[in-house]
Each structure stands twice: as C-alpha cells, then as structure tokens.
Length: 170
Image (cartoon, rainbow, N blue to C red; front, top):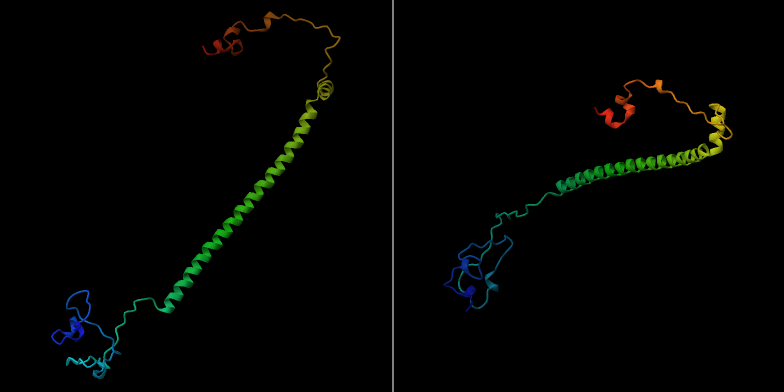
C-alpha cells in the first residue's frame, strides 16, 4: 500500500517531501472528486479550495511599461555615447589630416630649400657673390704681404679670453 492511500498517515505528509511535516500549497483550481479516488477509498475528504481564495502573486518582475522605459533610457544613453565617440573620431581624423597636410607642405619646402642651398654652395656662385658684394679679388697672381704688429695687443693678453681655456678659468 502506498503512502498516499494509507488511512493512518495524515494528508500533509503523503508523498515525497523536502522537509518532514511541511504544509502543502494547492492552487484554487485543484479539485479531486471522490468518484475518481478509486476502489481503495480511505475515507479522507478531498480538498477543494473555496472561490474566495485569492491566488498568490509570486511574480516579482518588472512591469512591461517600466521595462520598456528602462530599455528606451538605455538606448538613449548608448546613442549619446555612440554620437560622442563618432564626433571624437571625426575630430581625431581631421587633426590627423591636418598634420599630414602640414608634413607634405614642409616636405615641399625642404625640397625647395635643398635646391636653393645646393645652388648657394656652388663655388662659382660663391666667387661671384664675393667679387660683387664684398669687392674681393682672387688670390691667384697676387703676392701675399706678411704683417708683424706687436703693439696691436694689450700688455695683459695672457689673461684675456683669447689666450686659451686655462687663462680664462683663473
């Protein structure tokens, strides 16, 4: 004989239980008529919940409108973050493009200056400018003249800065 059909066993402890003598919770739509009990009817009354019993609300979730509002707020905040990131990326791209343009213009200037320096370093240009601007003459065919002028330096020339590094530190 099973535990459910034993007349000596109380109804609360019939079947498998996680804790002994715990109460059973039965929904209000449960009805066990005596006719379906079987031939081994043990005489116990079948449970039938009255119509006044309210069903417990075990749903502890968020209402649909609150969830929708929460989703809309989250989407709004994420879109603000996305737009901020896009504008930052655009500013960085513009800054990078400006730097690249500056580098290209500086490279053009460097190339032009290198050509100009190469022209200025040419020996024929240097000789021409020296003759025209400074009035210099070529040293070819001119006899050098040596000049000795001992009175052109001061008497304490050894202590001057031109005397050397040792005299300058004294």
